[in-house]
Image (tube, rainbow, N blue to C red; front, side, top):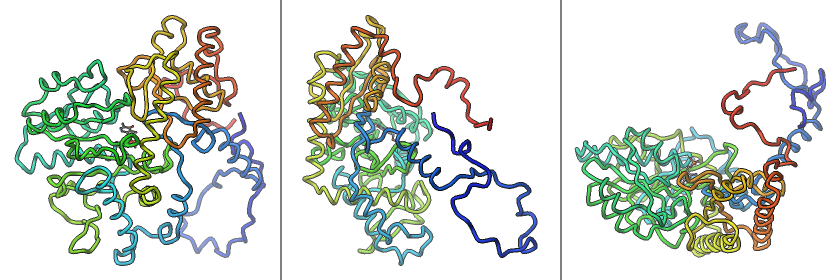
Length: 479
Ligand SMILES: *Cc1c(COP(=O)(O)O)cnc(C)c1O
């Protein structure tokens, strides 16, 4: 482990030499004067550069290696998106600038909203929500506003499949709904008979992902939509991972009424590490009046900001949402065009199926058959027979510079590894990853201890998960 920047500090060392202050003590209100010096690291410029470059080399990102993290779509982000987002006209805007000085930017957001309508088959979009879960919460509030406006007030339940992303039930619960879980059938889709038995006059909505978190497309989607609609409920589409279907099929055509997208997954915007995201929400006409204030709208051919609608669910975020993230996504969409988006999805599906076919003689695919953009394998048998777990495989991948797949999710698959290669990887990278997974499997059979000892090359080896969860040390104490 390298030192913290505070440990590198030496008294008196500096990066810059500032001119001495022209201000006198009595120019400043006494209450604002510090009583003791601010504790900052004292380092030379070269120490700072080495410190941060060193940290960046310890981190694994799309820019330095394969990152098949299922349900997260860690695809490569073309630098053109960054160029557009750093244009001074975008980057130097102030959020409080008067509207007539930001026409071009409003137009760009409108263009994005319209493009997303086209991609998803929705009638209107808002780019207010800052992330996927935020979009889900927004969608739940929209659905609630719709039922309330019709005085249909007994709808207190939201149905969520047992394979759903954890944010789905959380968002429904945050919006005040009771969450009802519906089972998956043996093909990994929604169990239709159980769904029939669960919908009734209390059903506000069904939240669904299609393809779901098993990487499977639910072919019963029309029937599912009819069951929910016939009961007076609405359909919510978790479109965090649109990577399999962009330009090929549209949630709006499948019967969904509300959808959120994760621009920071599908639309090539950097994510991870807590960076800004964007979770725009699209709706069918019936829900449009309730869209958040702050949504970009077109009124008499004039693009403006919806500000004071009384039926709106209100603002979901300050100002324009995560503006530059939205600009990156617009750039991505415009640079690929409709055909490019379609091709991206086809390649994402092809790459996932290629990897799955090259691994399924060793690894047990949880739900065999053609997958969409990702697939899930289970290490349950190997765990039982060889005491090698999904986590051991993941740790071994770290030693060859591959980011582990998503582990232990979805919950309905034991010892799950969820692999999403995505379309931006070359065949050579996929072949390298396939060979690595195969080698690791052979090690699991012959020398399980080697996997249980991994990783050996990372700055931090295995951490004690339980200790880290129960007694985390969150404050750095100077030695
Ligand atoms: C990532 C993801 C979410 C949540 O998105 P955040 O931006 O992390 O809030 C929701 N649903 C699915 C299926 C996801 O993969």
